[in-house]
Image: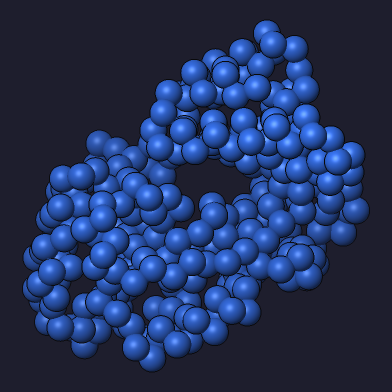
Length: 276
């Protein structure tokens, strides 16, 4: 299946980006759910302005590693030299900005506090809470909203997805998230994501031992653990809507507590094991 070259954006997001293109701040933070298309939004903004663009990505052992990489102090300090060269306009996009440790963020503060003419920074983050308050106070944050249900349906048409069962599955997994809908056209990616949905079902309906096995299998991957709980919450909310069961509402609250604690760097296995 062909993948569209430009991902669709929520109408209000598109309008906001057009406004930013006319008056781009020195520091901008684009935040939103994984799969909503933060990089797509940043690149569209860059194209509208027409500036040269440089992207900083997480690395591990000096090789780009989106899964486990970090944005190091060395990567940030390399920007010192780069931003001192003359330019008619430059945009530096820092993807997964929350992967900057405290030292890297403090190094980045110097770039924010000493603006270079015609240089702008766009931070992309799915977890902006992990950015230092001093960084957040010096950037303008814009949330990239999920697209509408109608836009998701049209986007699946554009992707060539005609099978009704597959469309239902994709919309359950990634409604409103165009980058994720696009990524899931890869069969291996779809199978892996569907496995998490199945694990979430076992997590909320299985026997205690089965739940402990789930907790054990997700204990080393915080992002996947959060995804597991998001899938569990979707399923629980559907049940609550259909049955009005007060017990389900209590379970939703317990899962939400576990989600917040894991997102705040709590022990993954402990929170999953005690969530229900």
